Length: 526
Image (cartoon, rainbow, N blue to C red; front, top):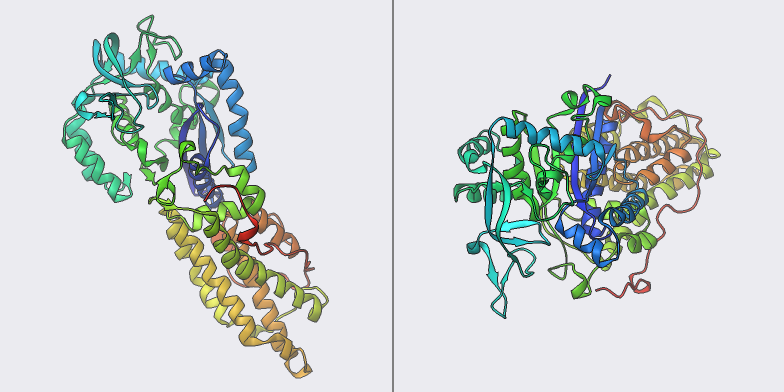
């Protein structure tokens, strides 16, 4: 039986550029959660999609000689293809240009209009097209030419004067938000992000423009012709579109899945998700998502990647060298989710060779080959005494440690817990020396016990590695003549010791992770 629903989102990504390492990082993290929680018995909803409205999209489309919709249509395959390449198992892909999403936006804001949370006014201030954000002059910086620039992207801002907008009474929610943060300390994670948001809200909130009237590339607001929803007032609502809000064909789904467990976002957009979004939900009388997790940036040589600095790496380039599973494993195991992570090809090779080639891949190769050599490539029948061994002691405690880490989206901790077992199996084989046990019939039972225990540990490791490296775990299961590893719906039960059937055929096959030489890899990026 299902443990219940488990629902979460990535950001709804801008269509101004193809997916890069940062968007892939967030999406792989969400997919790792999706795969694990399915194996853990939950009914998972994993929502992602594209943010296709706004002035920035219209301008990029024009520069490319396209209408905004033509540009968005040209970008959608780039994201879907990237997520297919990385084995992303989303349950809904929301485009904000879809009619179903327009229904969500119009229903939601009409509801807030009727409840009195909106009023019409004229905006006076500054606007950054790239960030799709309004700023007070006190928030801005000046460049070397003395021009006001955006504090985030450092691009020049535009002065917005007299544009008629609809405003959301965000200022009314200052005390309510602070009380909510106090009562729900896990709403914003990690804690450094929480401290930032609390400080921001305490400094005072201003009412928020939620419409634009100087262009028409957006969802029209039903209560006032000529106004379209401002991009953030539109995109945030994609999260509820993805679980059936305002969709007559998915009746009951929204009530079953909301509130969600997580929104995964980059730290640069936490104000939208931790201030504006919960205030919108409070106004609508809807529960608030349990946790917004704002992860850090990926850095090379301490700098955020950018084309101008020549330090950009693309997911497809890395996948060609390392393969999909090793790509996923590196970013989830070596970059602590929640903190900025310094990445490099050299470090990727180190992790690949140490964790995957030398530890996990080597373990499978040597044990499968010994099974072929000593037991005609079949799982041996182990004596009852084999059940008491150091591998089982670790394995029996692994679910609790792994599940606690995954529940907190501590991917590095979860991967490290599995690697401890893999390293201990390699040591167990060395200590037991099956090549010596095979020399005498008197130690045949002991030999069978060692090989069985090593194979059983490999089976269990493959289950725990599946959320990180689905292809490799499927291959290990195939070589052990077992079923579909992704069909497991109770990982705690499936990883209890002693379930590998004696007599199963064991394939050897090619090395799972051939060693790599960093000197032979050159992307032109340090």
